Amino acid sequence: MTHRDRGRAGGRPVRPPRLRPGARVAVVAPSGPVPAGRLAAGVAVLRAWGLDPVVAPHARDTHPELDHLAGADADRAADLQAAWCDPSVDAVICARGGYGAHRVVDLLDWSAIRAAGPKAFVGYSDATVLHEAFALRAGYATLHGPMPATESFLADPATREHLRATLFAPETVRTLASDSAAALVPGRARGILFGGCLSLLAADAGTPHARTHARGGLLVIEDVGEAPYRIDGALTRLLRSGALDGPAGVVCGSWQDCGPYARVRAVLADRFGPLGIPVVEELGFGHGPGPLTIPLGVPAVLDAPADGGRCTLTVEEPALR
Image 1 (cartoon, rainbow, N blue to C red):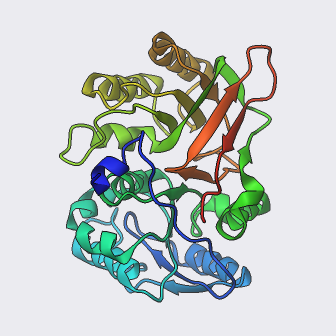
Image 2 (image 1 turned 30 degrees about the horizontal axis):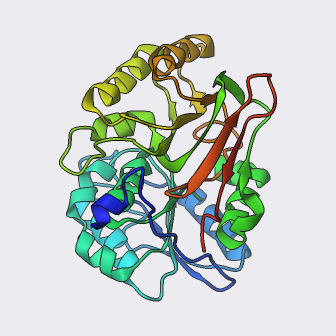
Image 3 (image 1 turned 180 degrees about the vertical axis):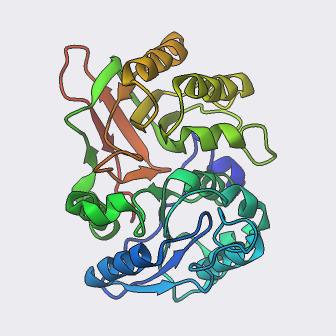
């Protein structure tokens, strides 16, 4: 079985080791520029957890001409590559999202990343591109979680604690739920978790290393600032490309600033309803307030009771070993 095959939704990506006090963590910026004050505050939190955070050389850069990027593509890719291939680094955490991961993912040496072995990788939003690449090109499980230079990480102690527990004691946070979660389509399903930010998944569809099916997978999706018709378009592209062929279930997070939620909900019901699989809405991860950390690449069970009972996502094995 190849790394690419093992990373498919139906495969079993390799889980990285959990973190322990003193673990060295590289903070990288593969996407947009990072506000200096937020970066410093986030690094201080990581240090207070007993970690040894190291900020990558170009993480504070801004591209001289394209100020939506944190430095040149080659530099952002080099930071991520160096961090992953450095045996003294135990985890790689994205400082923030934004835009730019699509520009660096093909600059990475995936053979070297596979040779270096799995490490905890944390990020969401634009980091979706990297989550998919680590799954499909390297066969690694990753963490869709809050990033240290973002408001959700810095403002909410519960958000930070859930990430900290996932990194240090993942067996303590295997059942994920939220008060807002509800069954859009009732049912129960089991599969390997994959996904992330919907618009990034759609942008990746059809590219040479993109996911070609979802058989055996539990799709995890959320987004921010996308009008309902654009959510419709992104889901339709994934359906037409075959990337959503055969998922076992769907787990939806927040749809921050995506228009009236009733309209978003109608799109989700219209696109997913015909698939005849369980769908849970508003599980509490993504760009909204208080996001949970969601393991990707591990088996989980989705429960969406028809009687209005509590919806849960239960990870069958700890996110990190």
